[in-house]
Image 1 (cartoon, rainbow, N blue to C red):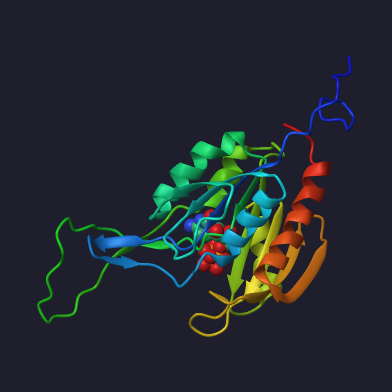
Image 2 (cartoon, helix red, strand yellow; image 1 turned 180 degrees about the horizontal axis):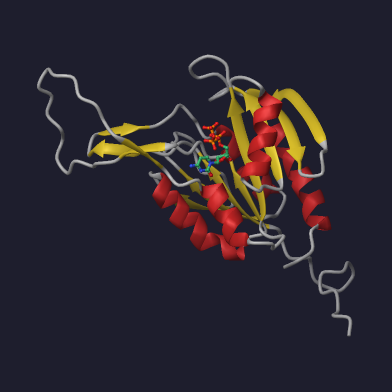
Length: 235
Ligand code: CTP
């Protein structure tokens, strides 16, 4: 028996919107209540994607680390701070989602010990043991098993060998698509209004966009995701 295509055009109701989770901004890993390890991500790319997706009628959950940006209109906003919080928040949203756009700059290491009280300085040097923060994308890819959805889209910020590193991440983390850009200098692409993107998929397709405003790049990437979703079988 062939199931009716409820979303077929002309059936009297609009097709259901694409449901996406976007992560954005940096995460923070605290040593004590007032000190943390983080990175210069401003969240601009993720916020641009969330805003553009909402504007085209997608249902958007935005899970973001601390940024100074205003919440885009039409998104559900979930503020988080640490990588662990981001992991749990995204995990809770993922079952009802078609695509995860993981732009967050997750801080890769966290202090192995957290001090409940502010650590007092005593003029001496000290060393801090760091432990790895779980890799969110790799965790979600593993949980997804062989299922085609949600589609997993990663981002890569690289200082050298952009394409080789991006392709390696695409394969290692088992992603459907990766969007990579170059970071030069201490803050590099972070915070810039314009950027470039190199987009790679698992079938070997390679696209290069920009330099262009981040909202334009976001829109091109959403077009690409719509294309992929149109061809991905529903789980
Ligand atoms: N990412 C993640 N969990 C982490 C670190 C990164 O899900 N703990 C995601 C990022 O959100 C991004 C992608 O993985 O979509 C690539 O992140 P990037 O920082 O470029 O790479 P890393 O995996 O951290 O690898 P490396 O630091 O070795 O470049």
